[in-house]
Length: 128
Image 1 (tube, rainbow, N blue to C red):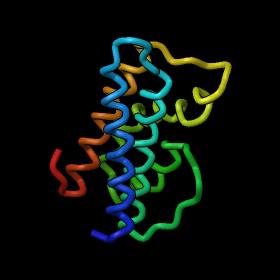
Image 2 (image 1 turned 60 degrees about the vertical axis):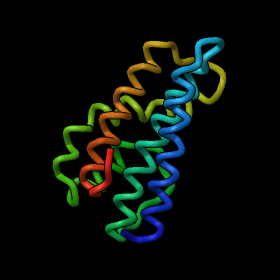
Image 3 (image 1 turned 180 degrees about the vertical axis):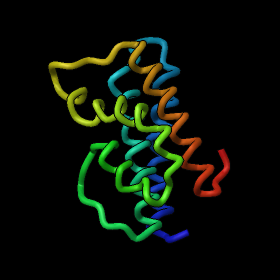
């Protein structure tokens, strides 16, 4: 594995850890943070796979656009399109006033992130 790929994976796992921790908070949970870090985890895993293939990608938070770039390398990841489309919404809008995630959105984001993370880690030969 390329060193930069490993760095992307480490960043993705950092977001995954924050998502998992924040989802356990009982008093004043930050559902926006759960959703945001779920999106960030997926984004960084997509970029890790592109990096490993030495593919050029720009600065984007659009998970579906990144997925479209990855599909020639990982056609089975098409099954994650709906999950990634859902998570994409949490990249920017929920970090600012106007939109706020609720408990259901946080739980759904977490579920979808976990599912996509498992797909990626299996493809990269990493343990779950």
